[in-house]
Length: 216
Image 1: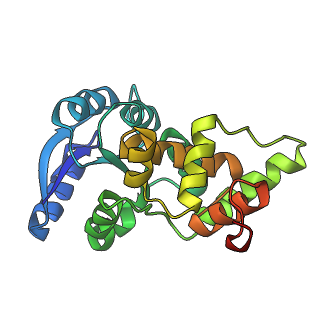
Image 2: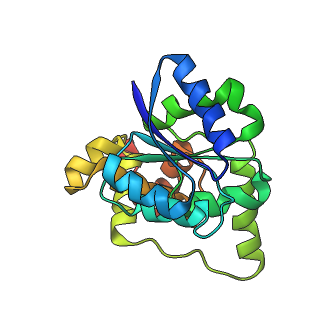
């Protein structure tokens, strides 16, 4: 049973989401929040498996709240659920540490599947995600910007991921939590414009972090 915290400043939306999740029989709503500040506070106290996060809220918005939750030393995932255009919201949400992104128009059919995928450690992103990341990378190059350098830990998790380590296995290798490792992976992918594990392997080979098996 997935433990979920619902965050939206509209009570009617939270009620609808609660009914949807509880009807599935696969999720338990352990809390609700109507603001970003409340979401961070309840995430710290409840440590749910997942936070279903709206973006547009007064005060601390969903992007800021996601960043704060991602920085907590807990295993909680964040799935952004918004009615806003993904072209505008996707990259800021991912940069903040979101693990998945779903448009509210698809919530009635896809929400539970998105939650379960994210809780299992997978990213749940729209098909346009790779295109948007690639576009951001192209724009940076066109503007003459160098890619933001990876930190030592980001380079290590990229190397371990390319070698086939799961986030949990990489965490044990580095004495870090799985959540922390996944945060490093997400930030590294955004810095480099990578969309998936195949891109990570290619980058690791091209940069020398990983050598082809024939050379090892």
